[in-house]
Structures are given as C-alpha cells and as structure tokens.
Amino acid sequence: MLLLISTFKKINHFFTLFTNLINKITTMKKQIIVMFFLLLGLGSTLFAQDYTNFISCEVDGKEWKAEAKKLRIPISGFEYLAIAAFQVSPDIQVWIRMYYFTDELKPGTYEITSEKEIESNSKKKNKKEDMVWVLVDYTEETKGLGHAFHDGESMSGSLTIEEITSTSVKGFFEATLNGVYYKKRAVATMTGSGIRGNLEKKLITKAGGGMLANGDPHYHENTKKSDETDTIVLTNGKFFVDWSKQKNEETEE
Image 1 (cartoon, rainbow, N blue to C red):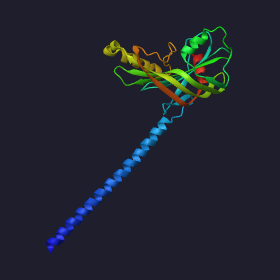
Image 2: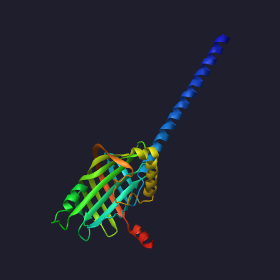
Image 3: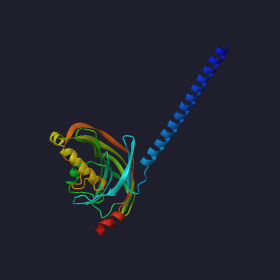
Image 4: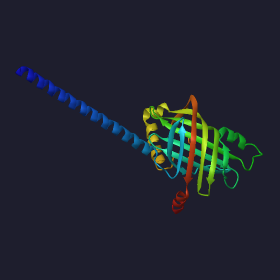
C-alpha cells in the first residue's frame, strides 16, 4: 500500500512538472508571436518614414521610397528640371529629368521617352516650342564581386505634373524601363579599386550629391555593361520636391 501511494505521488509530481513545462512553452510562444508583430510593425514604420521631399514607387511590385532633391546637371541647349531620390546600402536611385524649350514647365501629362529618341528628335529642325522630354531612370547596386549594378534605362510611360512653382514640383508617374546589368571590370575587382570607388560614391550619395559630375545615373566607374537585359516596371510613382531651402543654402554659400 505504501509503495502504491509513493508511486502515485511520483506520477502526480511528474504530471505537475510536465504541466508547468507546457505552460512555460505556451507563454514563450506567445511572447515570440508578440515580438514578431512588434518587429513587423517597427519595420513597417521605418519603411513608411515620412520625407518632405521624396520619390516613391513600386519597383516590379516592391514598394520603395527615398528622400529626394533637385539636381544640377551639366547640359545646354534647353531648359531642364531634374530631381532624384537616393537610398544608401544598397545604393538605389530613381532619377526624373524633364527637358523643355519654353520659359517654364506647366501642369500636364507628358510622355516618358528614351535618350536615343531625344537625341534623334533634337536633331530635327522643326521642334515644337511646347515639347517636353521626360526621362525616368533607375539604378540599383546588386551583390557581386567588387559590386555590380542592375539599371533601368528610360524607355516609355507617362508622367503627370500636378503642381509646379518656381521652387517646387509635385506629380505622379508610371514607367517601363529597359533593364541592363553592369559588372565591375576584372582589373578593378582584383585590385580593389572598384570597391574603393564605390565607397567614395556612397559618401557622395549619402551627402545628397549622387553622381552629379556628369549628370548620368548610369555612370558606374570601372564597370562594363553586360549583354544581359530585362524589363523593370515602376508603378504607382509619386514625387514631391521643394527646393526653396536648398536654394537658400546655395545662395548663402
């Protein structure tokens, strides 16, 4: 009888320990789930960071948004308005360039074209005074030895200017781009000069300058354009840039 009671107590103790273990595991699971949703919410909050000046869009269905600014690029022969948004690590940039012949841009919807078409049309003698050429370009740093790039060259689509003043512009766009790939040249990869150059570019980009020396979003030092191509689609594109503060800072300098 005493043996039976002792065995019963041991079994009861075992079940008590087992029940406590199950409760602890359940509690840990709940904590993990709560932490997961907290991190998910934090990630969404960080992504949804609000920028006063921005360009946003879906790149092949993936949401993207970054702080934007007005650019100064070396060009002559007609007026232009250029804005670009920069993300660092990995480097992702969206450029919007508008070239025109009138004194000012006006609200309206304009066709997105390619650089080749602009070069071809610019040679024509009878150019319309109200003609506006729009380029939308994309560049993304990709993983690869010595760094590589997947770019989208302006090809087709439409851009609408909703509001424009002497110091700001607001609008939206949809664009289909010609996807191309750039790889670091073998010498640059072996010597490490490609990586150093890329880091230097990152510092400039972080400062908001980007690759403004030549005004070309597809200029990647020590790289070679490969034969691989695809298509990059930018949808639900929106932009707003107010450069009044930027203009004042440049005047003070």
